[in-house]
Image: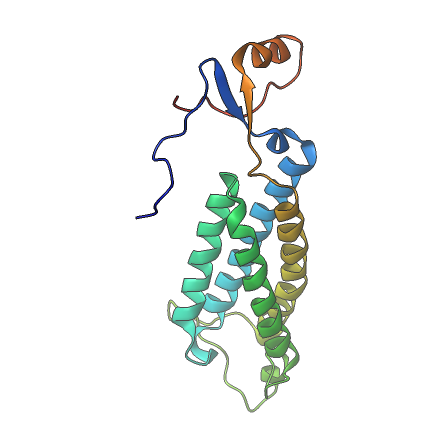
Length: 191
């Protein structure tokens, strides 16, 4: 248990909490872009995992865990969780390195090398023929620029201060909403 931390937020009567940085168009756009990039990354990883199942080097459970983590991060970022953005950027850096090594063949054989005569075709997770080696290589290389975008936008979102909260009198908030502005996204906190 954490000491010296009040269990309930104490607001003066007639005040509410708003998050002014969440109302900005740039913050909303950044949030949407980060969520979309995370979903695209998960889809690309899933396509490579399922389409090249028989030729992956034993880390298939890690692929599914990574996909699940990206989906969980996307869910919480959609709910304005700023704390997961650096974690998304760090995972993006790791996946960028892995995709560049796998796509270019820096560690041995790339997907593109598997289109030669001596290599067997990849089998799908479901038992049929998987994706062609050229398609798998292209998808693996497409993961890299997507991760660069994830790193950039996740750090941009982290710098926007989505967690900044301000105590505002309820009357002022009503005046702003009647005056034509958006009025803030903060829900009244318990007093």
